[in-house]
Amino acid sequence: MKTRSMAALAAAILSPVAMAQSNVTVYGVLDLAVESGRTSGATTTRIDSSAVAPVRLGFQGTEDLGGGTQAIFRLESGFNADTGTLANGGALFGREAWAGLKGDLGQVQVGVNYTPLFLSYVTYSMGELNTLGWGNATNNFVFVPAARTSNSIRYTSPSYQGFTLRAFYGVGNENADGQPHGLGQTSGAALIYRNGKLSVDLDYMQQNYAAGSTLSPLVPAQTGRYYLFGASYDFGLVKPAFLYQAHRGSADITAANNTSFANPDNHFFELDALVRVSTNGTLLLSYGQYSKSRNSAGNAKSYAVRHDYSLSKRTGLYAGVTRVKNGSAASFTAAPAAGPGIPVAPGQGINSAIVGIIHRF
Image (cartoon, rainbow, N blue to C red):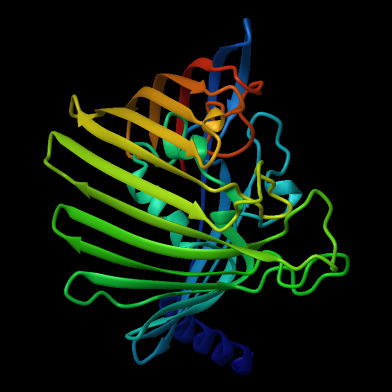
């Protein structure tokens, strides 16, 4: 009895110490909406999951290792709130899955990571309830494989005089059978500047792709290059932002293909602004253009107005209208933050309206 009492006392004394050294948080986002879009003379009305904010359930944690160093991790799963099924191709933790270290020299993380390019998208393609969502021109035009890769390493430096460096490397397919050597290999860096209300990002990224409709180890991978500039300034009542991205190195590609990482040469921009119309309400104004190199028929324009209204710190409502106007060979749609938008045939535009709710926990 005395031995068990001493063990219980020791556990009671040591338990708070262990709790203080490590921390695990469970978090999530639910986003459901009703969207109605008209294209090709027909109207589609649907329940939309992840329109403004990707629906997700996540686990993140830290452990104090001493000397100012922490072990960190995040596991994040995307799912469809309207059906309960997994998103991200059915991957359990397809949004993020990484572990790393954080200390005086910066932060390094290994696993499934967002690229520095994506982190600039979510900074300048703005919204009050969430960024890079329904209504944002960048969200309509972005090439998904450039935003996140598996088997990758990301480094973020400490901030010095307002400057921060992000560096990234993804190994790609790791020489999988039947695929070109180095397919999907991704590397890049971003220089970030923050000074009060001013934000500026400069990004460069390159990613290996395969030309042709069929993957073959006999066809060597080629390299596409991304260049990005983003800036914003918060005036208080109005916060404008500008994002510009160019992609080069794939003159032989005529259509985007996620499987082969092939993205046609193009450039696009988004000019957007947040207008704080009330204590709890913010108006998003977004305009953008996509230009396809050597083929103006692939060009597109995006216009949107969305009102975000916060009911509390965790719950908000939104409503908006958007129009995407396509050239004769383009088929961009009003894309949600995650998942497919209403299909649009080449040369057709879409007019869409949405009303939805977001809850965070």
